[in-house]
Image (tube, rainbow, N blue to C red; front, side):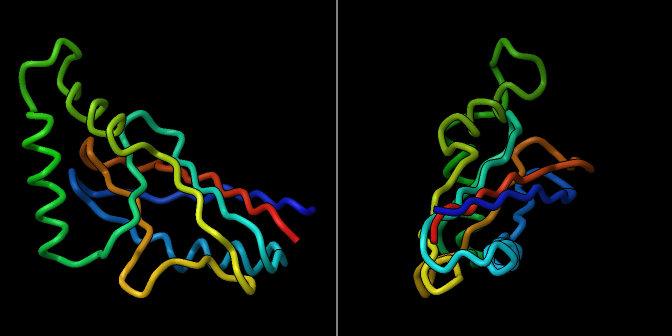
Length: 133
């Protein structure tokens, strides 16, 4: 069994900025040489989310509405971004996807992406580990 890890960096511009990760993850899997196994993507941030669903403009708005209804922006004891911490707790910063034939295996209408829930940040990171044969 082989493992390969890499960390990538990116920036976000505003709340509910969506960063598509699929092509970058496939580049890392390809570089790993692993044909079959798993790819773990982890964002080491307290206010970021990794999600898997369709990445379509109306659905992006629905995701924002859903999260804002579940976790309103005001009324939290933790300063100005308590809501961002709670949102990331609900939808977590880690996903595991299968690797088949040296590519991540997600569905036709699925995308894997990072959701910014705490304003624009200039230094977001993603740690990726590929495990398999």
